[in-house]
Each structure stands twice: as structure tokens, then as C-alpha cells.
Image 1: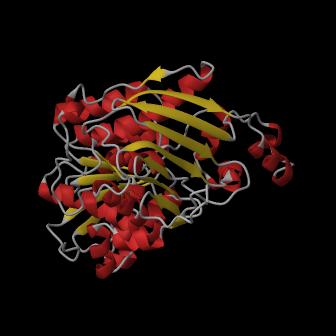
Image 2: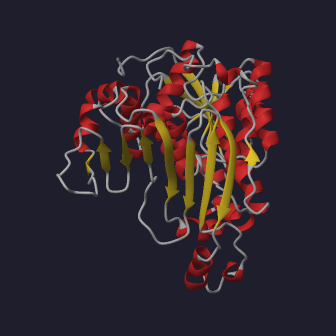
Image 3: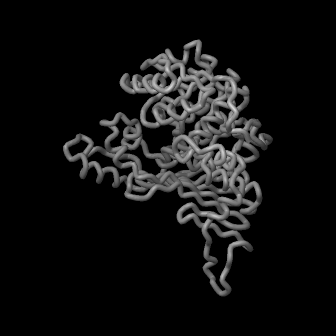
Length: 412
């Protein structure tokens, strides 16, 4: 693999310049075949900061606006990177497609099934692909586990689990001050708000939308106590001190797949804890667990005679032995960008798909299915954890979409 190969220049509009957006903008500016011609944020100071960064790094000042439409409609924009608030991802992606521009959306959950269907139908009608920038699909651990699964190390996979377990009480609790959209979702919704960091890699393991699909889910939320306690302690003079928080501290979602596998997702952001994506893989030949970095492969993991516990071993040697070819090439090339390098890879995957006129590795059907878990879990919780059906956004094509149509360097 030639990570040092760069293609034709792709002219980008970058929408959304908060903390995430500025970080991704900096990563994009490391790529010599990317020209950021427009930047946008609803807050003028953030738009100015983005324009200043481009000017400092590239020596020219991009078009800057607080209006996304102005950036999308520019003639010198080939593609649009959307890193705005969750609820604006789909409307902006649709506007980009209608303008003939390829959109890539940052991660986030859907507010309704209707917006998922509108995303899919607009892509189908215009013929313009959409990519979700789920960086965790390109993490070193996630890619290695995918390679191990393809090599048959786990046998037939039966169950997977994942989580977004991240203490975000300060980010959420200060959201009105720091202008962070996450706060309003926690105050007003009760759902698996942020499913894709864990669900994306699991979907790749289970071939979701490519020979398999999610068919139903049920969700349950704990009471909401953690954020309320934090607000009382840290913002005693704020009106939020006594605000009603709807989002449960721990939300658990169970998903059934067409081929019989089950998936468990956990959303856990408002209690004290360490960071984890809570990965678990269970197969007919063994298992892997992220917490503790433990693995047990039958017939391979050493077993002490008479030890009924079947104790696990560290996954370290497996991570080296089965390192995904893409990540091995990336390590030789030089890991760069944020989040241990995964941000750079997912952005390169999008840029390459634009250059080649190809479907992206994470396409519109993946985006719709993964995002839909948020509004579906919300409906299940509201109905007392009743099961709800997961729509087939491929309209039956999942049956024979057995491999990703993308054949580029960043195919997963």
C-alpha cells in the first residue's frame, strides 16, 4: 500500500469549526492533494479561526461564512466535510448532494427515521455518494480485530458488544457556556445518543448491509442522576442546577441481526469512570475483551490443568501478529493526525473516494442504519423497552452486497 501517493487536488468546504472541526481541519491541511477553499461556522469567531488556520498553513485565505449554503454553492468546491451539530448533518448533506457536491458527515445519531430515508433517497436520486467519517472503523485495534475475524481466529462470531463510555459531565454541563450542542440532547432526549463509535466496527465484523443486517432492537435507560448531581455541585448558581435531565446515565441497547448474531451497545457519559469503547467479540473459537485487553482462543491460549476458570491472556502478541495490512503500512508511513491516527485514515478514505469517483468504504446505507439506532432506541425506551423494527435502508440489496464496492487503498 502506498500511503504516500497523492492524487488530483480535491477542493473542500469545511462546515463546523468547533473543537472537532478545527482538529479535523488541521489534519486535512497536512494533505497536499487537499485545498480547503471554504470554511463555515454559525459562530463568526469560529469561522474566522478556521480561515486563519488555512491562511497560516497554506498562505491563502479561504472563503469564510456563517452561512453553510454560501459555501456549498461555491463553484470551487468539489466536496463538503460536515462537522456541525448532530441534527444538522443530514440536512447539510442533502443540500450538498442537491448542489452536486460529495458530502462526508461526522458521526452522530439521527433525530428521526425520516431524515435517514431522506439521506438515502437523495443519494440514490442524485447518484452522489455519502460517507460517514466514523474514525473508529480505522483504529489500529478495530482493524486488527477485523483482520483476525477474516482469518477465522474467533470462529463464527455469535455476539459483539461495544460502548461509548466517556465521562463527559463537564462538556455537557458547560455546554451552554462553551456552545456545545450535546447539552440540549441530554436535557431533552433519552436514547442511545452516540452509537457509531462502537457500532461501526461491529457492523464491519458482522457484514451489516453486506450479507447481513440489523432487524430489531430494544433499549432500556437507567435513571438520570449523574449529570444532575454534577450540575448541583459545579453550577449551583445556574438555572441548570435544577434542570430536568432526560438522558439516562446508562443506556443499554440490544440488537438482533438477520443472520442470528446479537449486539449490545452501551451509552455511558454522565457518571465517573475511565474511557472505554467496551468492545467484546464472542465466537465459536474464542473471545476478546477490550477492558483489560484480554483474549482467549481455544486451543491456543495456555490453560493450566485443573484450572476451571480458563484464564485469558494479554492480546498484545495478537495485535502485532494480526495487524491489518492497512495499519501496518500506515505505521511504516508515519502515524499522524488526532485520535491515535485514525482521523487521518478516515479522511484519506473519503478523499480517495472523491478522487476515484468511487463509493466510499462507509456508504449512505451504513450511515442511515447506524444513525437510526439513536431514534429507534429513543422510541423503544419511550415505549417501555418494547422491541422496534430496524428498517432495511438497502431495500433488499443487503442480501447480495457481499463485499464493499470500494476497491481503494482504504477499503475495510
